[in-house]
Structure formats: C-alpha cells, structure tokens
Length: 234
Image (cartoon, rainbow, N blue to C red; front, side, top):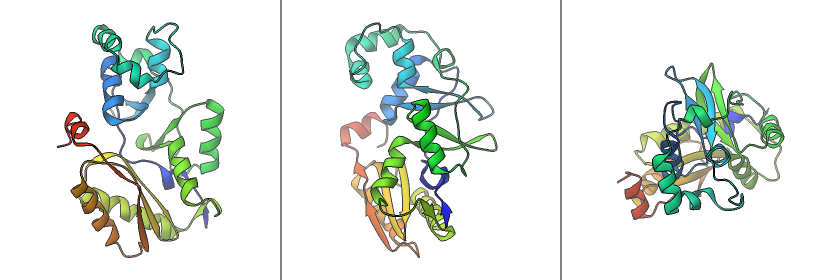
C-alpha cells in the first residue's frame, strides 16, 4: 500500500487560460466551465500563475461589496457585465504568481496542508514543468466521502484501475465538465457534470466494461439542456 497522492484524486480535465487573455474572458470561462480558478499557461504550456475568482474580486475595484455575496451572482448582475465589458486588464495583471503547485507524487496530507496553510481552494499538479491536472478541496472531500474509514493509501492495482477508467471515459465520447474519478477496493466513483443522459449512459457502459471494476457508483449530474447549449456542448 502506498500513501494517497495528488495523482490519485486530481482532475485531469482542466480549463486553462493564457496571461494575455482579458479579465472578462477569465470571468466568462469560470462561469462557463463552472470553476472558481484557472491555471495560467504561457506559450510553452508551462504554469506561470493561477487566476481565481478571489483575484478578480480583490483586484477588480468592486470596493465595499460584501465578500459573502456570490461572485458568480454578481458577475451575472447587469452592472458586473457592463463593468467587465469595459475592463481592459489582462490576466497577467491580476493572477497570483508564482503559482503554488504540487507534483503528482505529493502525498495527499501535504496537499491538504498547503490548501489550508495558504488558504486556497486548488493546486495545479505539475509534472516535469507541464500541467498534469488540478487538485482541489472538493477533490479531497470527494475522496473522504467515499473512503471515510480506510487508511489514506492506494495499491498499484487501484492506481492502474483508475488510469484505465480515465482512458475509458475519454474514449467513450462523453462530454462534460470537471469529470473526475476515485477508486477504492475496485469500486469506481464517477464525478462531474455530463452533457446529456446518453453521454452519461455511454460513460457508465465504457467504465462498467473494464475488467477489475467491481462496481461503478455514478455521482455525475446531467447538465440542463439550456445550460449545455450556452456552453456549446450540444
């Protein structure tokens, strides 16, 4: 048994943005992809920073607007839209840099410590200078919700099964947002938002056919048709 690592829980489908993108584009992507932060990649594909909703809130001159108010709700407010329409700042001007990152082999307890100590919600997972995925507080909570009574460890067989599931998910043709997988004792847990019911069925069929997947538990949600159309997923 090996201690749980970032690679065991990270999300591999990662929305990213470039330093030259505008603040408005970053905000739009966060809304569209249903995420609260984006790794910032340069032209060589290397992580040079991270931009979060917190960065936009702190640095977009919203003044005394209450912190407790939802950023997404304020973004959808007509005043926020008008503001972002005229805002000319670039992501490079508001992003946090350098990005605090971890390796795929970083133990999960170290990931949790960094998230808590730095008071951040996500960490890019970098392998040889390239973005391999992202691990967030929600990824840790998902892991805890599926294996609350077991030691924080994984076998080589479980890691191989998770990789097979990820490959099957990609080859199934199912489209969605923030898709992720956790595996425990042969039980596969699927997470994320799926484009349609048919995509959800295709994903479950592909994963269920994997030798070694003792059981598949589906925690995914089907994206409402109107939202899927807005996200250009149809």
